[in-house]
Image 1 (cartoon, protein in one colour):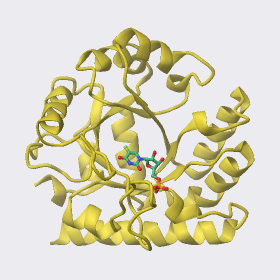
Image 2: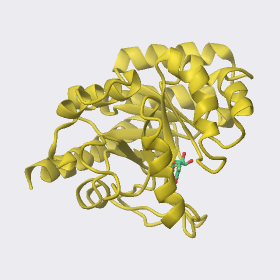
Image 3: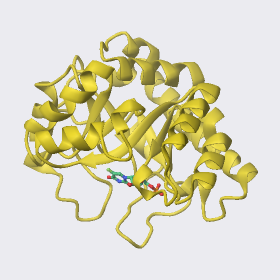
Length: 267
Ligand code: 5FU
């Protein structure tokens, strides 16, 4: 089954350049860790990315959080991506009509499609959201993840909604490379190699008091068959100046995620 294959073997099954790049990067760096850098200044943003860069396959961003966002920041992010060999994922969670999301993706202050290898969308508007985003992203070799499930308590993305999300992805395999989800569903079969990226990962706490729910890398990768663990505050905590400690935490999560993967493919 799919969960027994190595990331490298699975890279060959993908034609989308962003999916291939991510799987190859995971294999090359022996890391299925993505760090989500949710801070409000460019200084902290770049310092954290430089500290965790060696240990991650993917950096996840929310660039709309940055108080001092300027186009020059993107060049610095791209330079770090080359220095440390990681893929970039802007966690934009598009959720509007096709025409609007195409504009939000290509234009505005952030021009996400120009620099983010991967982005994501809520399936709530139906398949037209994929059509709109693909009109911008496909010619640039980008990939899209659909939000099939969320990590939060009381999430409405479950059951029939989640199943319909898989069907939307299946019908758009050139651009939809996988899901934000909490598990690899049996509904997604072995010959359909979708990537499962999973937030809500923490080794030390179970939640954040604002609805976030954390599971361990072992639960996510070994028990639930997910491919990439996404960790934010578990890595960088509250004091962003402690870059050595942040780097050490990234190494800790990387080891836990990789160990769970090795156990999975050996089992
Ligand atoms: F789609 C999702 C989801 O279901 N849960 C999430 O937590 C996305 N996220 C993002 O992952 C969220 O927006 C944060 O950027 C990140 C988790 O951060 P944490 O600090 O590890 O809780």
